[in-house]
Length: 530
Image 1 (tube, rainbow, N blue to C red):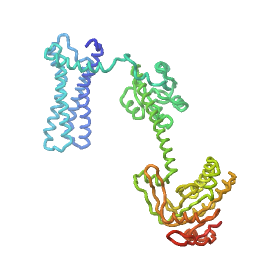
Image 2 (image 1 turned 45 degrees about the vertical axis):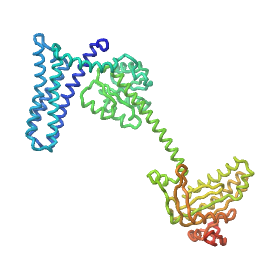
Image 3 (image 1 turned 120 degrees about the vertical axis):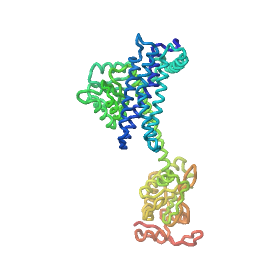
Image 4 (image 1 turned 90 degrees about the vertical axis):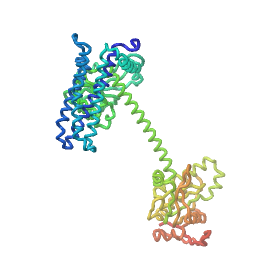
């Protein structure tokens, strides 16, 4: 055992063991009583307050004595005191307040026995169980302290073995590589109005390969934080011009500095200051004089969390960028409203549209022309034309459906209803003819297009599971295609339904009748300039 852990470490660990087994439960009893008293006052049960106050006073006495035991003031055996007398005194001083807590809780439980639904009754029973357990623990601890009792050898060995297991797990400081040595060099701002304190803090951090900037006042610290980036700020609390708490509050209120972790290092050790600083956003709070090894560990922990947060932000930023890229690609394929419906869980998107207008545009003779042109020239010409068509469709609020070879199809009134869908398409069609002619002039190729338009009822929806397509079906689509195929180069042929929808907003030239499969001859018109 001596080879594995030093006597000094063993003493410290045994004290920690006592603190865990005795001090923590004793403090918990006091805290639990605080909660019960608050609840009782809130419920107006004044008749039980006096007994609860006595129990609370006993718990404070217990905690005070436990603290003195841990500080090795009351636990030392006097020179004229036998082990039996010492054990009896220790047991008496520990059990006396515990017996008071137990006795009062038993009386209150007996008085409230008839009200099983009372939450106070359940809490009192829990409190009594805690007191009973602590009494047993006190008896065990006192027995453990009697080193001359042969029957306690096994118990003492068992408890020391527990401590030894902890010590074997936790390496002493200085043995092996510290995990903080892997933290990258960071920029740290040290804020303290005392020059000596600033120098000590800065020197220690520079030894850890950090870049350190110092500030001698709160206002200087805020100016430094606004002027350059920092990975950590070590901040004094008591400063003349602006206190550290106000500096912390302003740092956390500023969007540019709120993410910088702050460690408070202050001579002020009262609990309210610690709590308020943590609530205001401080990462940690150390009191002066500080332990340099502990400070190093706290700084390392803060910086590690900072770097982890930075990596997380970068990862989220990359995910967001990929999401936007995917969103953009998806919106190039499907209308935004359709994308939204799919995200909301619609598995089948199919709409019957009572009024919509469909346009087909075809490049005259382009198939034979493409056989004479180089492939890259063919693609370049089509790209210029269709890119312009896409822009024009967006400007007029029309929805591109698809391209079929050198044909372009779009519609108005879908996926959202548009009362003026026919007018939108009628205004768009002449601009499409002009765009084709303009590309022909630029490329020195004779280009012409013909357009057909029809308005009526159709079905619109999404097909496919891997390669989505938003498409339209129905007699309106077939008729619009027929209008285009029977049109003439440079002309826009519309059906009678389209002509009626436009009324007198455009001029029309009668074309004659076109044979539509299954519908017979249909009267058609050429759309003229307004």
